[in-house]
Image (cartoon, rainbow over all chains, first blue to last red; front, side, top):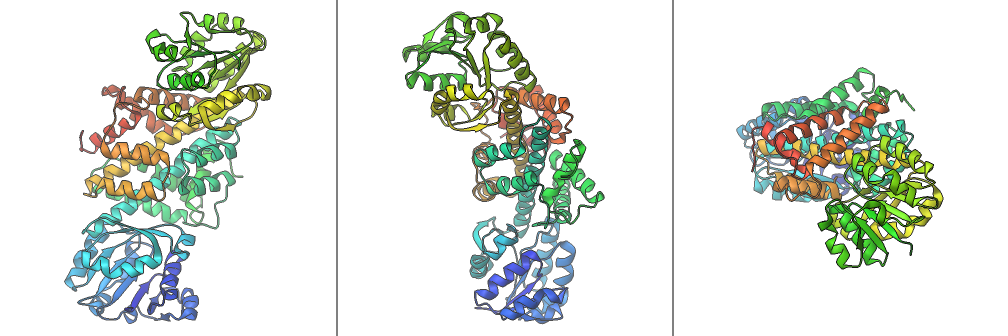
Length: 294
Length: 294
């Protein structure tokens, strides 16, 4: 198994890197907050203090960081120069399509292949190797990372040769999720203000027409008004909605629902809810209907 | 088995009445367009030319009609007078909560019990007895109609003693459905304008996070741009969104997504799409993004 450099040990990245270490990979990790590397080091990973020190020339770099800026600053010219010819960057973060397009060009200048592989799933799915993966990039690189993907995910969907495509898919998917949260929040407020038991309504939709994980898990959280600890923080959801809006603007796609969601997230941030789970946007709907907090 | 009067033989009502006849019930049917009764009469139902003639005193009336007006005009004072004490009206149409509340009071004056039992499912589900049923009303009446519900549905969800509750649930459920259609339409346009295969995006979401019938069936229709024949006509969907808005207004529940959907349906109606399936609202999104018809 070839050596792996792994950048980003947040809730998601930490769980994903752990899967790779547990599968026997030789993993060198870097994280801005070194403390987060401790559990991995105990399992056999090596922690380095400087990103480039994690990289083996011609090997694989995996990144799972918060946003465009984090990816761009960590995957520096120095890192790409060291990765060099034969090197491969498996970029799993949710970044903008524009950042993916720029990264592909930058990587090509260093003869490093760039594969986009954003993930769907929460930290518990990452820990269980049950993520869903949207993959796009050069074919040879796809075969090369397949053993890693099999350890981290339960399924891979291939979106062709252009890495940017996978990032568009990730944004479109997160847009579907947050749209479902908004719809449930409004529907459940309508029920509650009409003295219809929201738990009964949840039982109906989540076991029939919408018997799927998004409605079951997020619907449960809204009914129970359980918004912390966050599986995915509202501030991160807000970032993703902004990325959707940016991508829609760039491609000239009117997305009125995305616009509505942007305002919903802004109101939620303005009212101090950045650290709640992103289902916490339901509180803004409740308040607007005079229902208030639980 | 007690005699049943059945009003309303559209795509849904016709299939539901057929289930009752096939199960051996003595069914007298009325429909404004008598032609639609022919297949039922061939199976043993009796067609009458005047609604009250379908009714056996003290027996059961089932209605599955288009809207508030149809229910109010068919279930007349004459019909209720004939149904009389011991009579039961199983109202399965999608009517407004306000109409349900008024009907309950009107029925009480005739000693007729009023049960609301709107349904979820399309005509093929109705034909297979696979509807999902939202039931609310008096307990004794619920036991009495149970044999009928078991023939028409695959599951019954009980929302208590107030019939209006079931109608609120039906509207909230249809709102969730049409919200999912809107979200998919926007997400798939975003993909298409970024040269990402919409069929690939559909494959991902409908087999993972959204592996449930609404996303699978309606998502497929949007990707294939197959909007006729309608399973549920866009004009009927527009009516339901209006009912959601009316109910939200009455209960003072701001529902921004419902407002957005109302405009989407109005634009679709204004552009001659009343007779398409309600997934046809996706065409308006496509046009707005410069994608045009297929």
